[in-house]
Amino acid sequence: MSETNPKPAVKALVFDVFGTVVDWRTSVAREVGAVAAAKGWTVDPVAFADRWRALYQPSMDPVRRGEEPYVRLDDLHRTSLITLIQEFGLDPLPADELEHLNRAWHRLDPWPDCVPGLTRLKKRFTLATMSNGNVALMLNMAKNAGLPWDMILGAEPARNYKPVPSVYLTGVDWLGLVPAEVMMVAAHNGDLAAARSLGLRTAFIARPTEHGDKQSRDFRAEDDWDHAVNGMDELADRLGC
Amino acid sequence: MSETNPKPAVKALVFDVFGTVVDWRTSVAREVGAVAAAKGWTVDPVAFADRWRALYQPSMDPVRRGEEPYVRLDDLHRTSLITLIQEFGLDPLPADELEHLNRAWHRLDPWPDCVPGLTRLKKRFTLATMSNGNVALMLNMAKNAGLPWDMILGAEPARNYKPVPSVYLTGVDWLGLVPAEVMMVAAHNGDLAAARSLGLRTAFIARPTEHGDKQSRDFRAEDDWDHAVNGMDELADRLGC
Image (cartoon, rainbow over all chains, first blue to last red; front, side):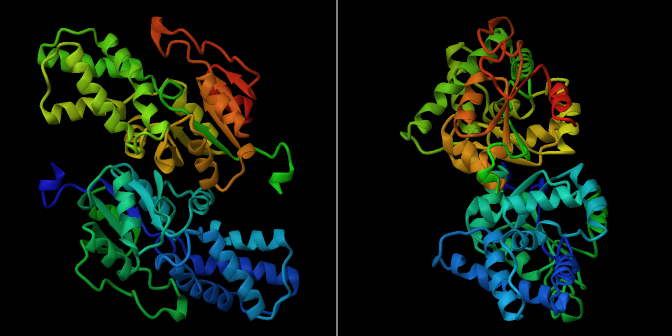
């Protein structure tokens, strides 16, 4: 019946995570700084974090284009990390220390509004991640940060990366819903545009400090998304939670 | 490093659900009874529930044997329900009422020890379902019953049904763990035997009333499983939670 109603009730919220829910830049820089102190690396931890994140989108492109089979984000992050240690001219890390630093992405801190806001939203909606992070990364992050997800969706179920449509649509299918019953929540206008083009509802959360003084876009909603808010608590207000 | 250690620490618990966590028989019989009262059906609701469940294992066999593509359990349940309504000589239901009754499996009540026990276990372990139920079924059940899963694994990620090895192994892989770091928890000795053969740890929970006076097996642990307990709270005790 939902299929014949142009505006069925929203039943599930799916979330971008890096930047939308967690402050990757501060968290990764902190971990890079700790390693630098221990190993005597001379490096700007924030610059290192920014470069690591800059390699993120290009690292997924061969999978998106179908040129490479799906590999999970933990593996792409590791490849980028090894590249960066060379690029910054730093002493290589032993395997266990490399793995620990690579898992900094499993230990990212949430923006302060997220745990209280998500806890309110969870009472009324099914909450799932719709991230390019792999399941283990998302589960470890949730355990560490107290994020109350009901389900991890995103890259791994579809074995591909956003904004490839199958990533969003596999998630909607697994939820047993139609796209209009699912709202994508993200701090990135491009992510919302991809979701809307597939029929999902959309909510923009402004995260104007995601990239610190390097932020060049996504300061505000750039289309008439269903909601545009400044935090997860405000989204809970809007959705009557 | 875990690969070289024969007994790494358990990091995640994965759970059979129907019978182990929820009392499907009482719950389904209650919903069948409500429909019978409303529709004037003359039927023993418990007998109907038992027959519905009896069609469960055979309905999955063509998928397990590779003769049919994966279809989710909601669809197998619906096919069985239509068969049973005919078999019991009952008036057919309109589509929306059929769908509501089919989703009785989304509204099963947990055994009383489960929510308190799982809540304790969740503080220390990642908790995931390892059920033949599809993701939407498991999520709706969790929301309805307050089951605090971190993740839904099982049939849908592997597009197959237990005890096919890929179901267990896909779950372990998505958790980013090796089998010995994952403990399968079930009320069915056969499920534990399949999991152990793949290297998972095992915990048996006795549910001697799952099938009421029709129960013929699984009264007790039939092998030296790592743990054998009488409830989720006792499992939490054993695992130091």
